[in-house]
Length: 441
View 1 (cartoon, rainbow, N blue to C red):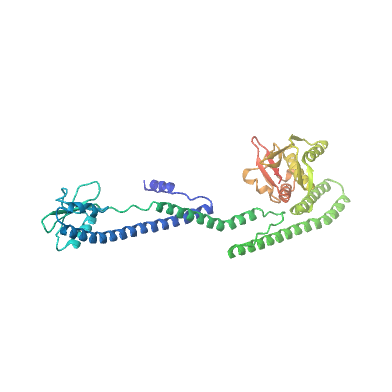
View 2: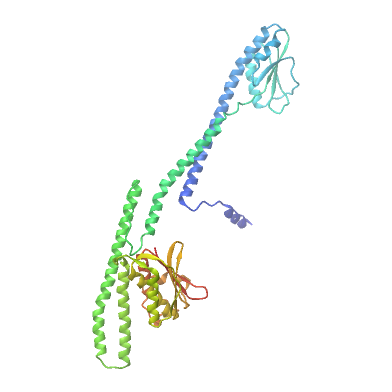
């Protein structure tokens, strides 16, 4: 039962909003509202105490003067003066007053003590409480001629000024606005950092972070720009090494091929030539991958997408390959034609290799053009859909070396898509097969 209670308490615990800005806003606003509420409560308490002190002092002096005046007036004139002596919280009556009970609340005892001090020792006063919806007490004394005088006291605090709640509301709105502005100024650099990090892609020109604002933000901006520069240098060095190795391998491979071809014919020669073909394909793909990282070397041109896709499909069909168009839109895009052709060629070849057939679907999705290459092959395990976009990653189960390929085709397509400002996305189709979607910027 204890464990269940603890689990229930954890479930009932309120959750903060997900964004940092919302959390900061709520925390700061809650703290300021608590402080403002405490200050308002202290102000009301001080006002109550000050008003009470003023009321008691005024009561003491006023009662002493009023009773002395009534004592000196002739008996027949006293009734005419009573309305002039009345106050909002107490009044005077000639006679014994209303029936009351003994015993006074704490505030009534305080008022009674002040009246006793004001009238002592000449006019002894006896107090009682009158049953009423609100607090009410009576003081009974006797004037010099024996006439009874009742002091009827109904203590009440003066209501707060009508503008006070309005002023408090304006203060709270001003606090909320200031907190919102402060949080926005504090969180905005983080949002800019996130946007700059999202734009950081291999093959794309680096966008420098603005080194402005508070000292901490400017320092972080300089560090981020330096990080971008180091990453770019590292990628460039890696690509140059890969391109150099791939290029230098072509010469010894050519010599080896010449020696094998001039050697004795037979099964061994065929196997060696097949191995050399595989090595040459790997070298070519390595060079292509190195160049794909710098896909921005090709100039951008306006392209009739319908004519471009149809030409590509007709080329495959003329070669006897099963490639079909299922949907095509009329659109003109500004892109790099050779890079786009290499992307689609790699994706179509991949579909033909593992399914024997490829379908191309071109549609406008969410305001952007999407070119989908679909097949009904074995697909890719869900946990490998992102890994296969890395260079030299191959799947041993359904896509192994026996089926051909170098492990660079999808990596090259992904790099070139990023260089074009787009994105390559892989997903498995319902009923089996793979869907490769190139989204153009």
